Amino acid sequence: MTTRMIVLVMMVLGAAFSRIIPHPWNFTAIGAMALFGGAYFNDKKMSMLVPMAALLISDLALGGIHSTTLFVYGAFALIVMMGWFLTENKSVARIGGLSLVASSVFFLISNFGVWIMDGMYPVNFQGLVACYVAAIPFFGNQVAGDLFFSGVMFGGYELLKKYVLSPAAKAA
Image (cartoon, rainbow, N blue to C red; front, side, top):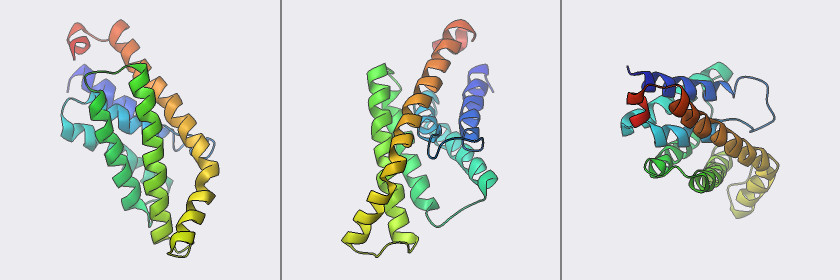
């Protein structure tokens, strides 16, 4: 394993750890972790495997799998794939824009899963709307967390690459 790969894996695991430490509801690095993994792991399989494994580890630490897990992981996989579009051009505007899209994708898919799987809402249009409306208070923290942690992860890695990592890692 190269130094670059070790740094990337450690950053993803550190981001997953943000779910376990005390934090405001939905203010975590999960969306940023998915974008980051998609953008920085050269191998698409690794870009999916490492963030998914980190998400699974943090889920298990938090109490396991739930009825909406497939929706959460599906949204997460889409966000990793969105990160693939950052591989060649990691500008602040692109990272910020995709971070906002990632928050929205996760909100729409995960809350659709709550509506369809949890039995908390009637399975009709009114129930779907009620589910999304009930989730709105959590969306602001999700957006803030995704933007904040995207800045930390992408900016942090670029600083490490510039000032700490070897010349070989800088080239990647």
